[in-house]
Amino acid sequence: HASYSRPEARSNQSTRLIADLKRGLSTGLPAFEEDRVRHLLAEIDALFQQNREAIGEALADSNNAALTAQEKELRAGRSHNSIQLRQAVMERNKRCLLAYLYHRLVQLRRMRWELGPILPANVQLNARDEEINWFSGYNRMLAHYMQVVHGWTTTGFDLTVNRQPPKSLFVEVRCLQDYGQLETEDGCLVNLKKGSHHYLLHSDTELLVRQGVLEHVGSNH
Amino acid sequence: NSRSSLQVTQTDMSAEDSEPPPAPPTAATAAVDDWPDEISASTDDVDSLASDDPGGANDLTVTPAELIDELLTAWCNEKLCPDLLPQRDDLVDCVRDQLEGMDRQVRLPGGRPTKDLAGYLHRLELSRIRYVTTDLLRTRLAKIQSYAESMTVGPNGGRWAGRLSKPEADFAKTYVTSMHRHFDSLVLNKVPQFLRHRPTELEAPRPNLDAFVFFRVRRPTTTAATTSQDDNGADGSASATTAVASVKPAAEAAEVELRPGEQHLMQFAPVEQLLIDDKILLI
Image (cartoon, rainbow over all chains, first blue to last red; front, side, top):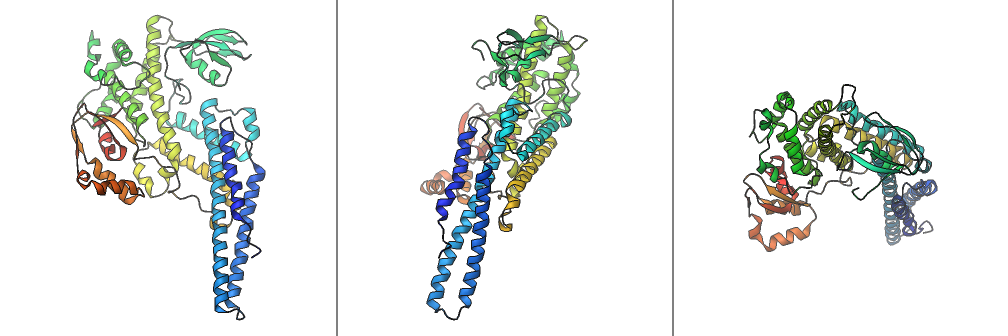
């Protein structure tokens, strides 16, 4: 049959999508593989059409009086096998595509906790619009959970801060970039200039440390 | 001085020694001793906590020290448990109210923190308790996110029905819906009809209830550990478990007697109910 094109070679595409994503996620969010995703979707469509034709042919064969019973059986068996194989490839493509989307969302979710509610510019560039939308939706549901529902008013009950067990209230930090004025929890204004050292409340520094503005000085962190 | 009423009995605290809390238990004890007296007076919410306490040992009042003790236990259990435990919002709300009251006391009228040493120590202690409280909720939220699909859809959802608090259940639902919408718009709406169904609950991530956990026994009890293990082997695909059971049929019905203070390593599923009943403590 001419329509028998090697599905096992194609399905490599879908697993490679996942493998590449896995490698890319260790450093951030890799660019959305628009082309490969579209390719896999097109492949599903193509296989679906092929199966449709194959089923049509099989029906025609079984009604064809010119064929002997033995020939009919042979053809039906062959076509049955390739239909099943294509079906499996379609399922596999779909599964890989969903896994691809899912793990990208998990990465965005992780970034929300690590980096705060605003995505870095390079991540925004690599994410699709739908993913950015999902992220802001996630922001909203998290904020809803933390503030509205629990009604927690005291500062510091943001679940995404206080991530490390506190050892002391104040920490010594070095400033890695020009950040500008920071108003601390106790009401002081601190000018964060590149290279300057400060002794600040732990809760004030935590997010800035994760964003790479400050770094801890000393070995206790 | 009524401060003595806040004393924590030393035996209680030493039980926590081997846990991994960031705040050393001794420091917790010391600072709890220092808590202002007014706190023990505002026990309205504390009472409501005690009435929910399955132990029923202290039905009338809970001192702040006992409250923190309870919080640390709940936190350690949740951290070390492979599955989501029943919600403790009563406890969390109670701690939160105490914390907010305390926080006000270590601040000047303008909302600025005081700068004396006592104020510093109080605030450090508050930040430790706050860490434990938020980390308890954070751990739960992380589990909910990982298993949200299993928890909200499918017949397995019933297992977690009472375990999520209302806010958590709302969160799980919104979270799953947002994921589904994302999948639909990027993939499922673009494939042929017969492929459009979402992955079944069998494919959704589920907690591993067969994971092994270390625990310490708090109150005498027994468990039919090996029998439950056999059940798992029978309805799952774990042929290895069944094979072992058939080699040693005598071990099947053996009940493990648990005496207070003992430490064991067992699979989670058989001891889950004991944990919920507060008879054991994960370590």
